[in-house]
Image 1 (cartoon, protein in one colour):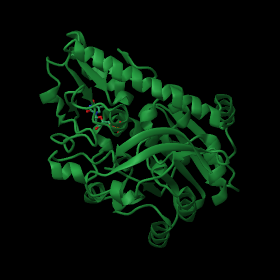
Image 2 (tube, rainbow, N blue to C red):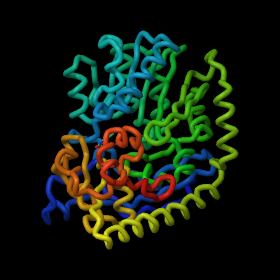
Image 3 (cartoon, rainbow, N blue to C red):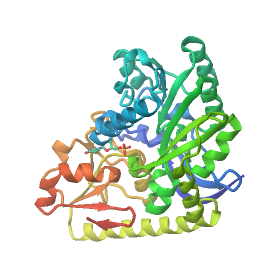
Image 4 (tube, protein in one colour):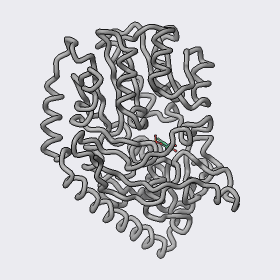
Length: 395
Ligand code: TMP
């Protein structure tokens, strides 16, 4: 049973950028209560109540993984690493977005599943067999019938979006060869606790995984985690390497070490999450105070990156156009729209990131290095970034 430890209040769907902010559109905007709980039995951290996936993963899905240099590089590296280590002949990707991972494979080697049909169309048009469907038993059985089983099943930032994990893993076991490997990665709860990055909680992140939770849950589908990596992706992610329970893959040293670290960090204890929740309240207070102080001094503050994460922050902290003039983002289908819930206008960096900006809140803090490298001129002329992780500060 889940016990609540965090309440982030009334929140919109993070992907629902508004085309305009007239009364009719605003009245129709969907909100839900974002609260998070811990299951003492499975150690899993999940939203208390999830949103209907059909409302989230539509044919209007905005996020394009290929648009970040950091993500293109990261997916190229992981594809090459997996090819070298497992030499897969046939691969399946669950949640292929715009093809940022599969484009590192030959077209006849890969099958992809992606429920956002605007994205599925992109990889389909590029010649990759893509099913515009949600991952579940039905599609897994269909794929098995039409394509057989796979040496490698890969998924990034997708499994944590799916409410029914038992069905996810059971479906994976249908499509995985006897000696096959399932590799998946998602944001890591250990990093969230460490960095106080509460903005990793939003409608799409139904769960935030730890090794101890996934090891327990996956065993119900006769699968086992045999290796694990902590990566810098999305501000701290965990990559699981999974095989059938009776495979020859042995638990690695780093897996044993991480299990030990998680117990030391207290990821199996409710108390750890309760303490985190108090730090989140403080972070809110500090951020609002800082922005208000700068505003009193007549400083112009914008936000850099119309991220899903920043939707959680702005709605939880009640930050609107009174504090943040606008948001800049390179994603063309976010530009000209308004952020969900707080309705802050989104501009292209070419238009919005000019000499008038004094401070830029890093909504895309997980791309801090890429952005700082790119925006050297802003820093040179005295512009400053604001971050909220691990503590609210000006950098
Ligand atoms: P994500 O954290 O969900 O991947 O979203 C990152 C967002 O930040 C995405 O909308 C693109 C935007 N962004 C910029 O606008 N400029 C940049 O330099 C980078 C790296 C990201």
